[in-house]
Image (cartoon, rainbow, N blue to C red; front, top):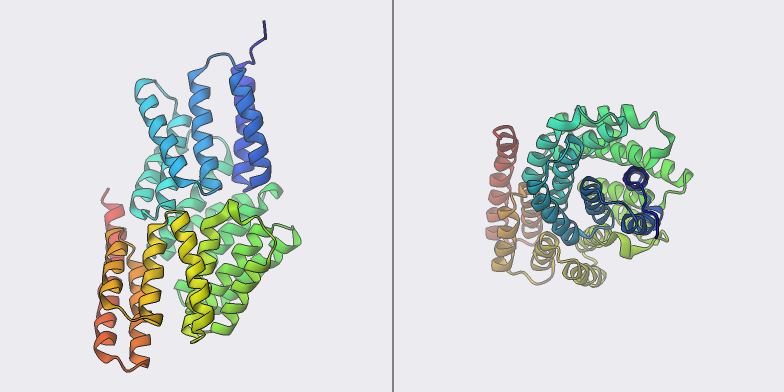
Length: 371
């Protein structure tokens, strides 16, 4: 008779696996998942540890950007937990990971609501790295609804913890990227550029290729937002030139291709822009990314074949998701382009759309605070 593994031993392995996920170490996390799966199959019966495995597995699926699979696991966990008494740790993970899942689906308000539910149990979590992870994710979500000072207050808390742990350089860099984006939104362009460049250098020094890719992507976005299109193009090219397995980060590469296509189209490099637009469309379809499918259709209908009805239909997709920042950004770009082409009726229409979208952005914060 094969001796069963103690559930406490398997729980320790799960903790090790989760640590690699928080460190963004995809290769090691994948290896440990296989080892943990074998251990689970040999473990003495323990429903709490099985729930813990499923929760960490849902987090792993988010790491490798398999959002639908993560959502299915969380739905199953919710059904199981309703039938079983769960401790505060498992409740925290359920709410926190549900927030991450909703964020991955670009449902930012829903994500923040889940984070706030998770916060009710955060005080029972002794691991300071988990506290840093919580503040990092909340900072990212608040940045998305342009609550920059709230976001910065959370990045400071996360940075204070990550700076004390050498094994979390990836997360330190990620938090600095969010800080830099907040500076950009606050029109502190020089501080933003310097911090983006600093993160690229740190990532390069530690040979963290994925973080270096993110650094170039975000520096490119910084340049593009200021109209420094040649510099932006160079950054997106640099991100794509780094040798990294694209299949594990398809959404990231979708973002890079989208931004590169957008930059090229703004530069009137229509042939090259069309090629990258098509490449991004194929990837958006493959990943079932409705938000980027809409954004790509808008680019196509502004810069290549003007189609007002397609622009409006695609904008509705973004409005339904309350992505008012994206609506404001894209309609502003449309208005400027149509003004440049002396299509003044369309230019006026989309300038008005941009103003209306900007007025909606502060309402997102009120919606969060009224929960």
